[in-house]
Every structure is written in C-alpha cells, then in structure tokens.
Image (cartoon, rainbow over all chains, first blue to last red; front, side, top):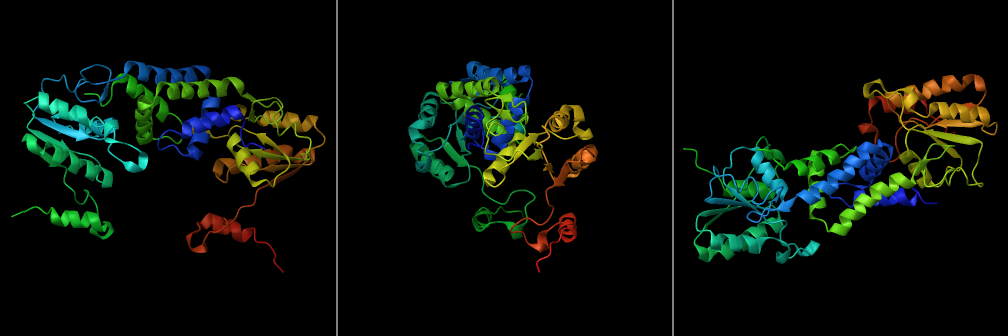
Length: 201
Length: 201
C-alpha cells in the first residue's frame, strides 16, 4: 500500500521539488503543515502569493525587488563606477552583509550549464551588455560567479565579450578561506593560493 | 539597508519556520519560488491547501489519512491484536516501508517534552487508553517512541499506565545499528547493546 495518502504525497512532492529540501525534510515539513493552525497555513500560502505578486526584477540590475529600480540601484550614495556580477539574488544579499562593497550589482540568474540545460539566453547576460553599452559611467566589472567549472567558464566568457569595450574586468581572488588549515585544503585551492600569492615585504 | 525586500523576507521567514529548513535553504527556496512559472506556484499553493482540506486524523489510530478510518485500520488482513505506538505519522510510513509489520498503529503526535512546552494533553495518549479499554482484541502494545530522553520517558509512562490492564507492553530493542562499527559507537548504545545481548548457542 501507499506510504502516504495521495494528497499528503502530493504536498511532500511539491516541497521536495524546492532546492535543498530532501525527502526527509519534505516529509517533516508536510506533517508540520498538516498540524499547524489554520491562520498559520493561510499565512504561509499568502506569503508565497504576496512575494510573487509584489516582487519584480529591477530593470537595471535584474535583482528581485519590491520596486523598480531597486533600492540599491536608486541609492545615490553608491559608487556607480563599479558593477559586481553575481549568479543569484542570494549572492547580492551575501555581499551586502559585509557592508564593505559600495558599488552596484548585476544578477545573472544562473550561468551557462549544459548539464542543467541552462543556456546563455536563460541568464541576463544580454541585459548586462546592453547596460554597459548605454552607461559610460561604469569603469570596472567585477565577476563574482561561483568558483566552480560553470562559474569560471562564465567569467572567462564575459571577460572575452567585454574585452573590446575597454571596461576593466576583474574576478574575485581564489585562495584559502579565512580560518582554514593548509592540511585540509584541496589541491586546486592550494594551487590557486600559491599562484595568487601576494607580497608582504 | 535590509538584505531582502519585505515581501521576500516574509516568504523566507515562513519557509524557515518549517522544521528542518534552515536560513540558507529558505533563501534558496524563496528565490526558486519567485523564479518558477505561475502554474508551478499555483500548484504548490494548491498542494498545501488541498492536503489540509482532504486530510483528517483517523479516529482509531490518529494517523493522517484521506479517509476515516484510515486504510490501515480498515484493512481486514491486518493483525488486530498488536498496536505499535509511534510519535509521528512519518514513523508509520517508516514501519510500512519494511513490509514486515502487519499489526495496527497508534500515532501519539508528539511526546511529553517540558523543553518545547509539549504536554501529555497535546499528545493522543488519552485516545490510546480509550481505544484499549474499548477493544478487548488488543493483546500487545509495542512502544516505538524515539530512543531519546523524551521518547524513553514516554515509553515508561505508558508502560506504567497500562500495567494494571494486563495488556503486554513491549519496547523496541536498543543496540548497535546494522552495519555499524564498534569503534564508532557511543557509550550508551554500547552499554544497551551489551545489556540486551542475545544467546547465539
């Protein structure tokens, strides 16, 4: 016999389709949702609907926001000469957490990845090119895609594309993370830390 | 400035309030929900609403089900002499997965836990007592609460409560899990495995 009734199984499947949520957590969450008071369930449903309705993509940086342009793009105190290119809106929030970066952003919404059928057209790369061609303020594009094969390929592709424009294109440093021990570093990280070594004196 | 817009932050908070879903996964899932096609979002909302509407608690075993009595309680091929007492509906599905246990269930929906303000009245223990007093078929109650302080306390409490009834009360065996290595076992598990040792010849 089936392990759960059809309607419960469907809820579990829907939850498990969200990224980072496995079967066990989906089951626990489904039981929790079935057990919660009605107003809490309504609030969950409303949060999903409301977030989708009141969120748009900023026409400048493509980040999710309640307004267009987004608060970062419309903040006159920010340095408009620098654009940090990231894969996802989460990466923007990660950089904002440091309170150090004062420039603007561009959210790609993914990178070219043949394994997941993600093409360049699925990203907002063309919007970045358009933005750079229309805005002569921008002097530097910092590419902060993830440090993996797809992220590196996308970084090189963008760098080659922007080569003729004269805009400076940089990439985040590769190396050992803060607090890490040499003994546990993987070979590629160690190699990039060695190649990117800096002069102390 | 805020890291996310209010409506996105609210969605992240709602998702993070589900059990087993931490901040990072809630952020990833929220972005995924914002990015998904409208019909997929509608389907997620509908799954939540539908599961809650079409699910009831079985009046016999208190498990979540689409019908009352649930398919297990109304299955005439099952052994009605044995009741396995578990903490959650997920535990029922775990036992059903083994295809070995053929008796009935009773879902407590939690155990007494002062740390989470869960009282005995929040569990379905009184329904179990009522069920046992009305049903003279039942010969054995197997307590399968979790092997932690709260689960053990609940097991002892139920055993003491049922003592005068003459119904046999058993508890799942404690010991080393299949495939485990002695070297990595914790002291309490090792001790219970030693105390519960079985005669081979």
